[in-house]
Image (cartoon, rainbow, N blue to C red):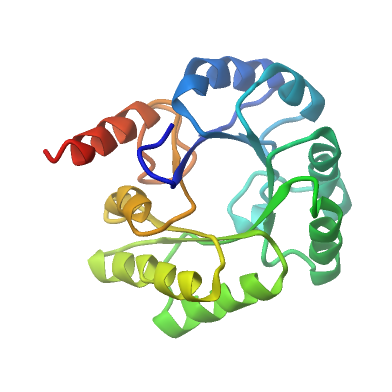
Length: 231
């Protein structure tokens, strides 16, 4: 549904299944992928999402140490991701900084069943070019299908460093999601779509974003359409 090969993913969070399902059904026609954020849910039912929604689903259970809401042990955190793999999810997201053995096991289990995104976030700064490239190479070595690098931008130099990762990712044949959070980073959520990014993320509406600088999906699609029409 996006205007290029870059997918538009709408990120959804809430306290329970009915809350997220209601939001999902309202934007399903605008999204290529729906991200179900499990980390703010007390008792997530992965199977209900898979049975109810037709759009490909990405399941994320973000740990507190990576800016998410999950505070339990790692076995409990990964359990619903395994359920998503077995249930036919399109994607799961596993953090690069997850214990290496646990990360390797879930990527291996998912292979051939659903795509794995190995992610790395920094909610404070954008690291140096060398540090970002090191993270990209570590993601590539993880054997995941897709990498994701998202940082907080304090200026356009930060944005350019992150977007330039697409060049190296293309050289090694590794699909990459790369953009910046924050006010300065908002432009990167659009620019990545034209620079070979695998996917960009949007909010269901202006009041329910899951990261600073995230655009509402309707606004993002309007911008994409304006660019397509040369305005």
